[in-house]
View (cartoon, rainbow, N blue to C red):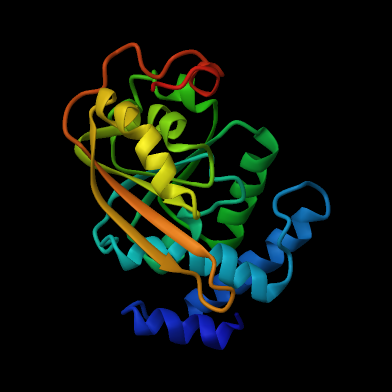
Length: 238
């Protein structure tokens, strides 16, 4: 996907980008590739691949959810900033918090935010399990997102405790979403959520399947969740 296709295909979805925003994406790409030589951020480093599989794929959440409001968003395990930084560039009004367990990635994100001149962004080095028990962050976000972090039964325990009651958890998934949904329904319910919508689409050009699960937080998460680091992965709620 070249920049022209990127711009055109987003415009078709009602997302128009200014020259300044396009410059930010280009600088993001260059910074990602430069830092990737020093540390492992992504296996995808060609321009077409980054624009399609990282930028366009991240922004695809906005095809099914309205990001035009200044939401408080927490992105769990964002790695090199996906999906929240590409969304922040497209929707500058968003307030983004990224939590990631690797300090090196946090340093990259801090540098990136400075380069891109992003405001209302903060990066926190923590495990999602301990972060979800932190009273300053627990049930404090209108939207919590995660892309390719863990299967839904595990991911729900990392994300739903951070969503305020009435807020939304958006899980960005690949082709296995339906199986994960079946296995993760109990966890979603126990943690106070309810699956509201499920959207399936193909990523352009390579036509790989993508799924977007939109989960509404209906009631408070029981205090014991999330459990200690590593526990959700070892013994998911099933």
